[in-house]
Length: 249
Image (cartoon, rainbow, N blue to C red):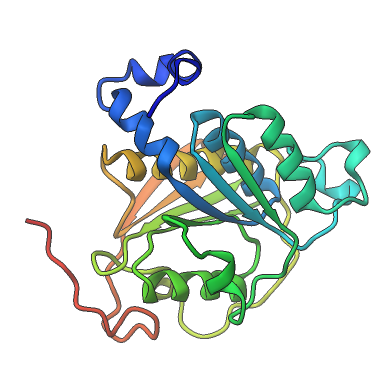
């Protein structure tokens, strides 16, 4: 139930015909799991908190370093040496005291993902490595939880939305191991890609618009160009190949 404070805070969102009071109530009732409180996690969590998502659980085991500050806008100079999850929880709760922010200072593993993501309506990938993304994707597919992938490098970014049982999954895109490396990133890029991920999440929760499922959005900041590629599900995918795909009617 929306309070008078909710009606005032989210007035401009409620004015959007496709959202309205019903959509705002759906946002208030939602629980989202954000894996990573870095560059992508910063912009995703800020805008979901501002939008009134009722419960945000953000997990990251890293400690804030000076080199993070060109892109990780949740963290400031005074936070260097602190845990990212704690910093994120404090900032987001200050931004919107009417919602619940849960911070988790843990490394995401196959052993703890079911506990960390328990009760979440969706999972958001704000990570910077493939092994953890595979863990998140497999858990999401196995438990029929929507998975929102985002990635950044240099001036280039990617976004993909996975609806288990209806679309290709993240593992369909990649076969075999992917080399791990420290990637260069212009600070504005995670902000833009994170905002696109947050938009996808809001659309999914409120049930409006068309999602980036079976699609991969590519952004080239140097050329200022967006490209959307059609993604076909891999029937032999080790994560989702066993699922029966539901056709939209």
